Amino acid sequence: MNIVGLDSLVFGVDDLDASIRCLADYGLTCVERTPSGAVFEALDGTSAVVRHASDGGLAEAFAPSPNIRETIYGVADQATLEQIGAELGKDRPVTLGSDGVLRCKDDSGIPIGFRVTCRRPIDAPPVLINVPGMKPQRPVNQVAADPAMVCTPRSLSHVVFFVPDVAKAERFYTERLGFRVTDRFTNAGPFLRPAGTLEHHCLFLIQAPAHMFGLNHFTFHMADANELMLAGWRFQNKGWKGFWGPGRHIMGSNYFWYFNSPFGGAIEFDADMDLHDDTWVPRAVDANAETSQTFLFDYRPLWSPGGKDH
Ligand SMILES: [Fe+2]
Image (cartoon, rainbow, N blue to C red):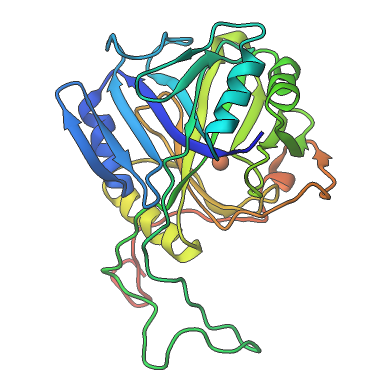
């Protein structure tokens, strides 16, 4: 099934103001703001939607608030939407909303939706780097380090759930929706890639006790490591507390920087994820400090040799 990735994540939160401030500080663009919430977009139109947890328009909560309330996937075309409706309609209620979203629940009970993707071409300057031994990419006299650089997340990357039965959750996405397992943490769960993208994963499932069921974290793609570092730096300086990163994962190779958030899980910046096709042979390893990252840094305030704290 030609599912291209995540289109939108919908959150039900307790602190609406803090949640809206978080998404704005993260760098997304607010495209809708009403008393009941807001919609924030990345450059390609993928989005995060935030509402108060008590909002009657939200999908039914499957976990205590704050948490994610709905995960909406983008599909390539109307035919794919109809294919998904026919498949999932075999054993569960499926509804088509006036917003064009086909809705149901997955086998864990998580509300999911599908729509013809909203993704549009990204209008942003190209990322140009100079690498010894390669033809220069950045024009002569064009500087790369710009403290005023605007860092807008480009695209919704992935979402991660704690689930009480990871095998059952995995089967739903692989057997019913055609996702492929790209890699697996044997003591946690699978990284999953739908057929319409080569990106390592847009979904990662983690086995967890029932009381943890819900959002683990979500992230948008930044352009590259430089942009991730600068965006994360600014985010931390606005008061958001980092708990992991910056670093680089091994599974997926994506650079990462995770922060606590008001959404019931972490918010991450990521960049430069691996691409895989159907010839890729999934790796399977235990998740631990050695397998989770190639390197890891800690944030510290700006500092200069010879400065007053030297
Ligand atoms: Fe992640």
